[in-house]
Image (cartoon, rainbow, N blue to C red):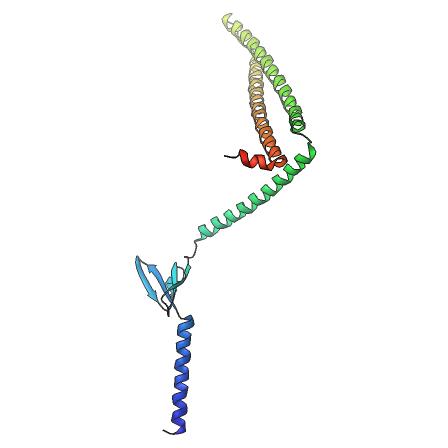
Length: 216
């Protein structure tokens, strides 16, 4: 064997050794499901790029990773919305904590906190009482107008446009007043709930160990 042949043989051996090393170290196989059938190969066809797949080390036969399928536009939008909501929730929680800390610093005792809410509750109660009295006055006035109209009809006389207009206006005012009362009652109940929540948060900040023990 001459020198040229020896050199060529050595080159071939070096190339083969390099290819073998590459195969051992990094060659991958891919397995995916398409049309209900599991398919494997050493390269991904264009149609399988967006499918979920398992990556396998060709030398060991072991799975090295999982790649999920490509998300649809709706799923991408939903994921973005979830991330946006998570950020908003985090910011809201941080803002609530700052408010709780300010509340604890503002009121030396729980009774001070209750007194502050008590003033707001008293104002709401006074407003509600005034609204209820207003409703009663409107109702009595409406009953009086209805009586006048009824007496005219019983006497065979026509009900004037002026009286009808006053009846309609009084009825509209009564309905409006009833809506105001309903809103005030909702606000009153909401403030009761807000007070209960504030007291609970106040206690948890003042005595966090007790708050943890009190949880179910």
